[in-house]
Image (cartoon, rainbow, N blue to C red; front, side, top):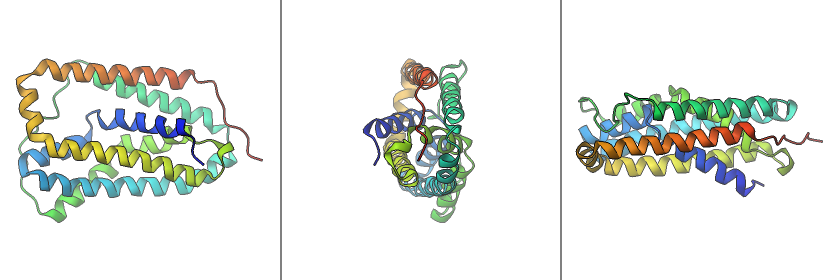
Length: 215
């Protein structure tokens, strides 16, 4: 149903995006450092539900539109390439601040932590754009059920994002201390990730393939 190249493509994009500091990472790291690992895990639960909300909303509407108007393939492909380029610039631009040096935050209840994790994800434009423009370009009309493909590929993204974020939550304190003593390592990580995202953006933009018309 879903081609291996599509699964690997989504996994690679998801990995690049989850490793690029954004609202989710900043919130999760901040909670983990200031309130402990349990708070970070509870917050991650809210983030996970946010992913599911976007996955359901996008796929239920996208499956119909994408089949009816296959010409949108080029538009979403270019939008995805543009967004990857933006992420690359965000990682490479000078003056970036380490996500592992958060401000002090008040201690909150588990319910509030979960809710804030959910809202942080739902209000994160990076997630909305990803589901609307990046995942669809890995869907093949020739492979059949577009709706099922969307859910499967979205599940790959969620699995990658939650796995990486859980590792970050569990190691946030140790990472913060490590990077505080080695600022050059943080710069190297940003440059490496930015370069990888930039190359992926160029590859997506130059891809001349087009989806087959459903019949």
